[in-house]
Length: 375
Image (tube, rainbow, N blue to C red):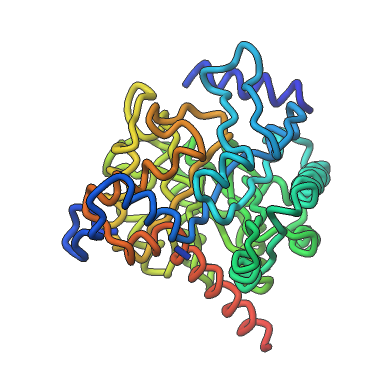
């Protein structure tokens, strides 16, 4: 599978808990210097909704516990910026590890690929048990964080990884999966991809509807990243629980298929969801060139459109993307806080942006599941 992945990713590269910024809802944090902002950053609970470090381990055998160089000859796109030391140095407190399955896998084998990748993720977490621990609930996140370790959770990128039978989601849940993105860069038997957003009829299939209903009952979060607008609207109509977009940009800043429209943001927020802004330059600004202020432009637009209670971060570190030159790795994350403070965000707003909003969504999803199960 590695050769197929490398070919696909190379082609893509070649072609391409704890905010109203300059928004009127808060005032400054009182931090008047970079040192003050960095101290504030260390006080915050920072949860990254999506990073792809396990993909590097799967493809290249990288050691998550150590800094490692990019694959030779692919340094421009394939910089691995989110090893454990860098995450800890940069003040990241909790992570959602992306479980990535080759998008053209044979349907009957896709769920096996997902389970194998999850085993790799659990092994990486266990091997780094002095610093991190697998979390399965919102309460786990808080408990593990309070113990001084990093809660690590798993989210599947693309429902093709569920395989041809929606009931497979029960097995994935039992093995630790806690969110599923309905689509990735290809359509599947459940939902359409926003890569084909210009095409009509990209809605959920009957299996997609069944999958969401099963996820609601399990307490598993539905992720709308990469998902066709028609499927987003279908999911919003069907789900009884709030949903997330784990890593995205917004069309109000850069109008491109990968990014979320204002209307879809409003519908997701009305459902109580959270929208994670990523650091992927290709989708942040034309020419694949961005800065940390470009990231904040996207954050600002989410806040101005749907409010501070519905924004989060989902870096997409290690996602085979070019990052802003001034935000090149997880250890540089305090720079984002410095610039957010300079834009006018205060500590309460930053706490929501960096972790509280995602925790709230997770709790609401769990409570919905308990109600649906009658427990």
